[in-house]
Image (cartoon, rainbow, N blue to C red; front, side, top):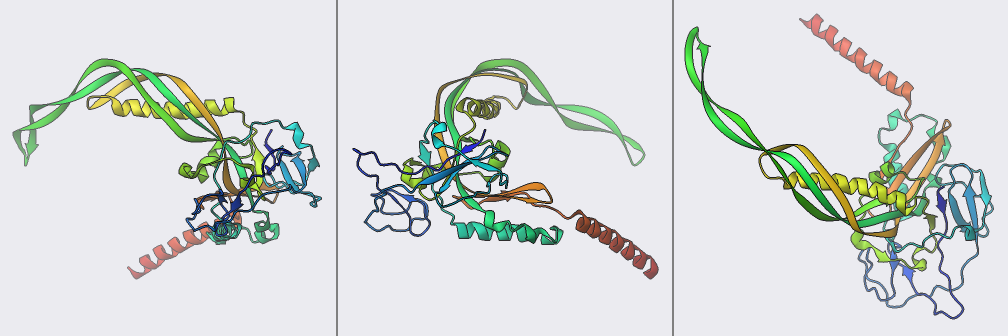
Length: 357
């Protein structure tokens, strides 16, 4: 079940307060001693702002898709950002007990910029959009959320076997007819010599991000990648102040299997590139993964889910790079009209061409 929670700073009675703030230019998290913003590069003022008492939160869970989110204590209702449902119930965050995130990348795209990207994206091919789409009032539903991703690093040790082919060339003589006469010619023919070969291969893989959210499947996650992992910062609760944050609902064991499949695919490609000779066939790779390490990372994504004629659509913005992805409704009546108009136009051109001849 997909779960969200609001990560907010906590202050223990006997612990010093945590200090941190957002960049005044782009809102990305800035640590106390940072002179420049890690996201936009703007120079920072020397002072820091202490994060003190925590604003009370209310926690809601969507009974339609299972998403859980924390909102301000004065908010009495909530529309789910993942499925656009209003069927939510209040719950206690103590029910979670999940692993805390280890790294985070801050938002470098502002909500205003994300809104403009959505409007630009929606205007593209606008003629094929349904005429009543404006009634959905979808833009106001665009929400910035920190979504969980699992990142793994591991060492692949492989044994492989294959048939290795090496090209060689011979010259052959043949006859053919030229201008009614039989002539003798020569041509160069390529042959392949095959032999079996087996060996070992090992490589270290990292950097593949597996969605930790059931609400954001891996296919949709791939659509808004990449994220620049050089901007990763060690997680501190104050980084997420004021933002919604989903709690992972895909367990590490399941995410690890997804990552293994991706790294095995990469290992097969690496072995194929490593092979000697000019070509190969019947490649077989057996791989064991070891030295596995995992990190739980929070990544910034703007999410917009809306319904049009009882069908759910989703729009995503990478909160670090601004890359957009999503699906939008089409008016099949308009598409059909365009196809019919094109066919009639072609027929008219044919008739005009025939008449002129």
